[in-house]
Length: 122
Image (cartoon, rainbow, N blue to C red):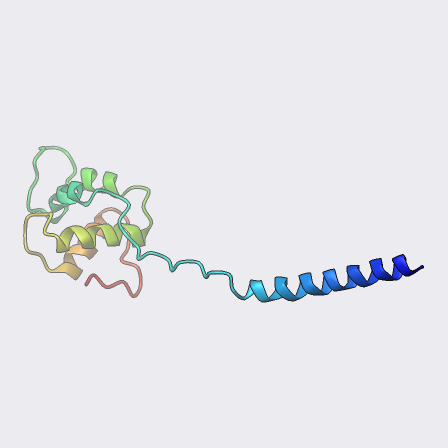
């Protein structure tokens, strides 16, 4: 009979000890790292072909000026496309100084995309 009481007491202390430290450790778990800032999933150097859309350069006669540019932006969400073009314009990949908001809007609309609400290319 004493062995049963001793086993029950041991089991009770084991459960109590385990629950106390398990609960305390849950508050010590590291927090996940913050999300990285959004970045362009495409090679922004290739976006130099988007100067065609602005009517500044048209290398191949008979080809719609936006075809190469829009092909690069195809499959991207509006935000990703805007971010890629913003990066290209700021890095002067297009090879010309541009009015960023106007150029961004023109290129995106030529490729049936829109500047996302609240998006600022800074």
